[in-house]
Image 1 (cartoon, helix red, strand yellow):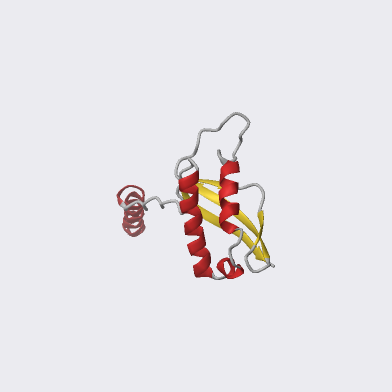
Image 2: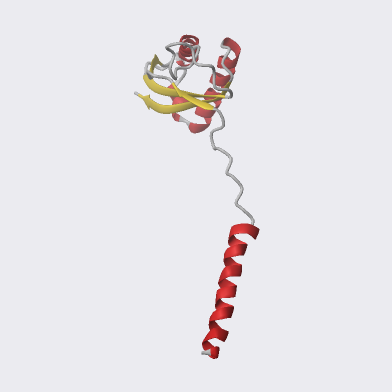
Length: 137
């Protein structure tokens, strides 16, 4: 009986010490930063624009705003100045070449220009412009 007690007691003490370390003393994992910092607003309808080379494109767009705007009555989750946003995006995309939308590097440059245009022409604090769907024909 004493031999069993001599074996069981140290095992129980080790298990209790391990549990205490895990629950109290072990370093806690840091909270992960969000990958998209800000409020995400997808624009309701995709853009259908004429391109410079006689082709056309259908482009879905979403905006990441740095601050979530106060919801206006009946606005829901729409971008506050959506009409101005849509006009600015249409102006920039109309007449662009198909290669600007197809080539990754050129598309990223176009997205940067879109962001600058939106910051200049609207009151929305646009952090990112996301082209969610791009179809060129």
